[in-house]
Length: 448
Image (cartoon, rainbow, N blue to C red):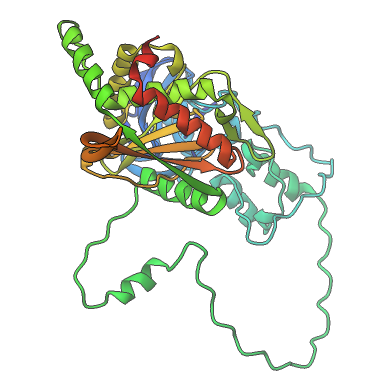
């Protein structure tokens, strides 16, 4: 029987992706573990491996197709002895996906094959189908939709037994075999009542629609740019963060001169070994150690509870074309500055190439966003749920400061901690930020 290859879920939050490239063609023979396609998610481009062996009978989704839903059929694999002629019965759609196993990538969340289609008993009456809520989306295979239409059945009234409640061929056949209850006679029509004046349509929750916005700029020249998966995800997650996470902000000034002097000395000594530490490496280490010193701040919001962690897993924002990643440095408190520096460089390179695996950017309780290299003096960062906090780092600037009653020039840096008040209260956040600033102003303490 032909085997459907489904669009895999390459991360827990993935709902759709772009089929960037096929690495096989129709007629090619594949074995389990062979790379057959590259899928672009909102975060990265990942390879998809075959989980069965056979011959590629049909590539259902064309290369370059965007917004392919998870669990949609993307290709059909023929087993030994089958040929493409066996697909002729339903050229407009792939065979029923209830008999297919997804081809998961490296981080697929569920590699189990959905249950095989079972023939419906001719005499058995099916259990009552639960109708969908009005307006709810109905998940059904193309074959199931055609069968339902041919039997005069409303697909929304059929209970699905496929993956994620998907309606498949067997569900339609079962519903068609069941005795049908005659529809009740319509109630007598009442006398017409004058309809009230229509209320003005409410604006969409997310703001003005595209056509309404374009109407505001009638007569002005502009180009339209469609959103890719990454930009859509950033927009959705950060809108959610600002609407649902109660942010508050704590600000401190950091005197950087001791850190800059130590960095210069360490880089001179490590030059022969290719070690070059950045200020951000020191900030990562300081944040990791501060989480150990103030463990109450090493926490995330989990809906109806707070999760507190032992290890310091620090996420760091990396800007790429069209968006950003936040790869996570795990156990950062236990790693040397040189190890953190090397790992951060590797993660940043893979992020810019969109080659991070989900395990590289999922997790962490605290994040760092540094815009100092762009000359930004200070800013407020948006928390990336479920993190409990994020540190916004500005540029180091030479400024006059008062030390022991005398005015001197020092390099000062502004840092702002954005905090989720559900997880961290004001005093706890201040204690954590104080510990972090303490490590930055006494950098030798990070090496002890």
